[in-house]
Image 1: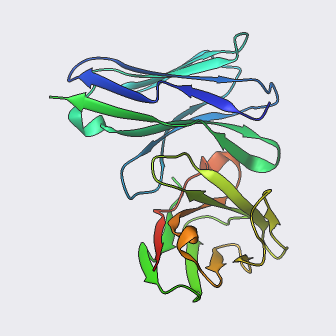
Image 2 (image 1 turned 90 degrees about the vertical axis):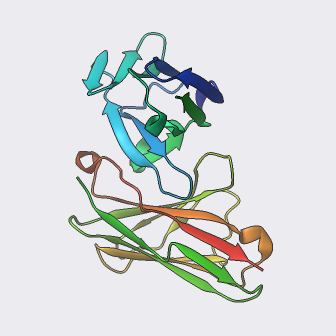
Image 3 (image 1 turned 135 degrees about the horizontal axis):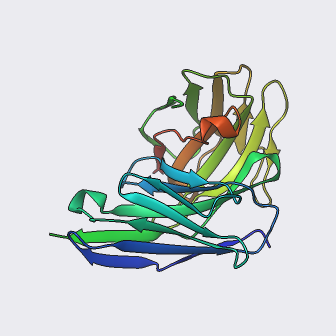
Length: 111
Length: 115
């Protein structure tokens, strides 16, 4: 019940394409869903986050779509660029401020 | 946004020695500090949670006597890996929290290599 399942494990997208990463959860007590971007040897950086009372949030080329009834949320990266190549983690927040992370998606954007 | 400073970024130590990692929240007061460990190609795993002035709470399977956490002030927490062994080699990341308004940011991480 505390898991967040993320897919795909790896993703290759052409420059200018749309990258889509999906996450699913079980625990309805989760109330905050951030996405993080991590480059090798660096800590995760917060990209965008959403609360369950919102179905979509957009910040620049990054969009979160949230389906509360299906307990699923996804990250869309529009006009993907080689500089977006990184590992992306979804997460969910539960009691005590603890974040539960998905397994991660290694994104590679080909020029 | 919240600014977090974590040092050192890399450390190599000999087996049996101890290593201290520092994490500072530079522009907010971190009432809670989370420490994570990340093995290569894997996700972040929470090791322990500490509140300022209180003892840390460790996740299942994490040895509290090996990973000593001090959270003596609202802006500084330290993780000391005691009697380090090669299997402790990993990427350690702190996340000071002042609550949801601060977005749960992370330090830049510390790559520990025990030889």
